[in-house]
Image 1 (cartoon, each protein chain N blue to C red):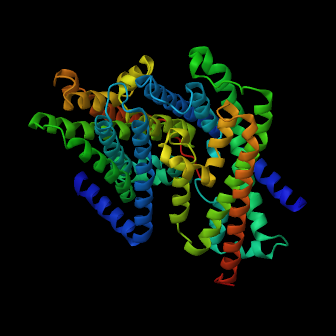
Image 2: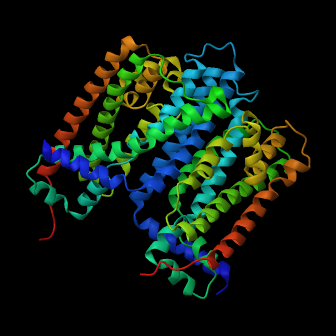
Image 3: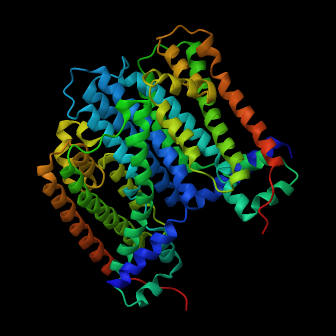
Length: 271
Length: 260
């Protein structure tokens, strides 16, 4: 276990080096957040009577939380692992006295968490304290109760687990398709669309709702954000955690099974 | 060899290189089609829930969306070299390009014609064609549409050129610029009127994206008469690109090699 912890810690430190990039990213994400809020507010303003399934302040909060935790979305597999598979250095990984899936999962966990943590706190400060100075109704409101905030923390952790499991799954599929961006692009597209990044999931047509919430992607941004804003009642928090854990277990099992088959047919060239 | 012939040779070479890995190219293009298609699906979902947007129908918004995305894809395909300036600087390859007896702008434009952008391009084109179907076209509005799309491409290319210029100082290409390129692309897909005043001014007077898209689109849709603003607005897009190239040339003077 301590071996995995050391891997997480080392990667975390190396990823925290890029502060200028983080600042720059913060600006871009704030910009996108503002545009997204203006667009959604315009839609809400156009149809005052329409039965919108989500209150406007909740939508605003949802956008900011989405921007803050944006980097949880698994855009692609772990770069280092990708490179290892391409060059064949993946054999060195196999010689380590660690379980390969566990190793990759630990790396993915750090790779997903460090940038998110670095960006989340300043984004929260901006959205909660700075934005409301200029336009009060555009800010991120604090959670409705202390309980909502406290329960949001494990849900956020659950989101990180799903994200890391998906990232590792992307890396594993590279054992079949070497240069393949195919599967990662597919997963990333699904994650953006069905994760609530394009528009908040409750705003999709009603017939799509059961499917959207059965998928793992809802557990990354959507469900935790809605708990935070109060759109989902505190009493339903255990369901969110159950959704996240069930999907994490399923994705880890799938990733492990695929990796086992991949290693069995792995042929490494050269000496 | 004159400049145009050289550029065409660059392009032909770049296409040949990319066609070597056909499957990879196809997957990337399809992936882009998927990603941008998803974006439009999101807009559709919002319209199906809310009916209209500030008096605009989905088909009207689709015209703006299509124009913006086709223009953006064109700029993206052509501007790859400028996108890479940061990487070229770091590796010292930029100095090598400066030594060649040809204009650096020409070399960067010919760096690569990105074929994978055909994914976004075709998605934008499909939306655009769908939006164009019910419109009664005249020669004037047809010409305006074509000129506007080219002008939009020029604005986005201008932004990429400015981004490249900034790397003479920062070396690392900063993500800030994606707020204006990708962020501008995202914001300009919707009618300008839904945004706050300061935001509208920014995308009209500082980055003339709205002059090349929103106002011409209003005229094409018959919301405004075809007056001076929609007819000559797109010219600002071409002027923006010319200005960006001028700034780029100034920036090169500031260029100190990163050494090796």
